[in-house]
Length: 530
Image (tube, rainbow, N blue to C red; front, side):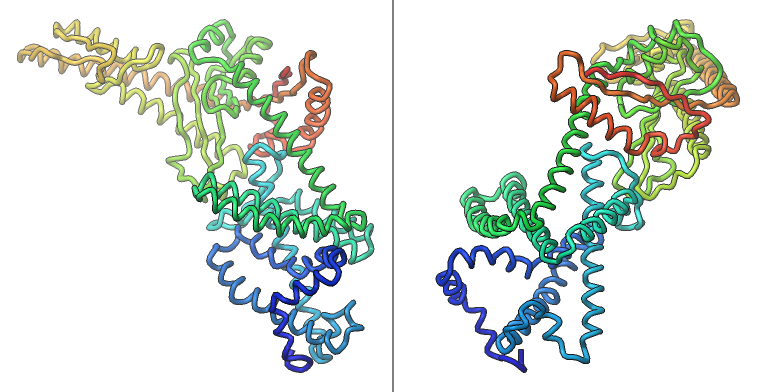
């Protein structure tokens, strides 16, 4: 700029924009598709939000990236003022000879960094889509113990690499690649404007006149650029639109099939009151069955399907639901949430296992040991809490009812008068008559009897759990197949029976994600007719 034309700074005058369009409107409008490439690449910084904080990106863009872009384009424009014939290779022609190779190396490094930002953004989008049930299950590796957004998705990484090689070999022209990149960038700008308007209305509660002004101003700019880049649709611009349409189709079909599957499971899940009638006719065999389910409440239909077709059940059944939380790690004493399912004599439990994104599960043995240890602790805690002076309000079929009834019978034998409160009271039983000294002694003996009975029951159930553990632990996993009903439309049958089936067959299996040993895995197949 200082060598060729110092007055090039006059290009900031908006009058030149008017003159440019006034002279040849159509040619100027078409050239917007090339002008937009001047700003492409800078948006790669905002793809690093998963790796860096918002203030660091704002400072880096405002004080480093943006000023450097302005100086670089001012220098190239000044060079073209005296060398208009070098317009095809302005960047490299304007570099002084001693700085050519260092600048070439920096340009290559910048391209690598920008591509890395795009790859990282793709990883984040895929992970968020999986959380919304809009993308097939793939392996996600967290590479940082402090920043949740730093992830690596092997399948997506290899797919992007293959696609980049294929596209480069097929196009063999930077012009076509530039046209494709221009449509992708302007499309992102238009989508960002639309979603930002939604955020202004739904989250920020911005006045409607401000939202309307924002849509008009930025929407007009996006429309001008997008209509310009569409002019080069046949010269490579079709590529990002084709990729976007394919991904949208995959995400829609996966979400469509997953939604039907989840609704089927919710409609056909069993209540805990129906478990007793389902379990009692079955033959109980020694051992512990860990039944994996995505439902945190209710009994999955795959469990009922198993018992109806194979009328045998392990002596102890634990319904396991694994949840991955957006935290680094979950402490061991907070990992498992246990509760009993149905009455005590059917020996069924529900366990919600919680993991952070940096918790390591390399083997199933450690998981079994922790779960069974937590199960024993739960049984002890359940019994001890039920033998307190104040019993929680009973639930039909629960252990609180049985413990309180036992306590009541002992107290009645001791001759202590008491009154059972109504159903709305906070305590199940309360003594309203002040006992005499003889009655107090009888109550003391009654409490000791209750504790003795409770301890005996706890020891017996713990011994039973230990015997079942020695008999072996089996993993039960449902392998459901979703099929459209005969009355469904042709389009629904095609999406569910063919497209969704292919996607499900080629995504990551649940047994691999949950790290289940194959030699002790029992998969139960079931058709979901939706």
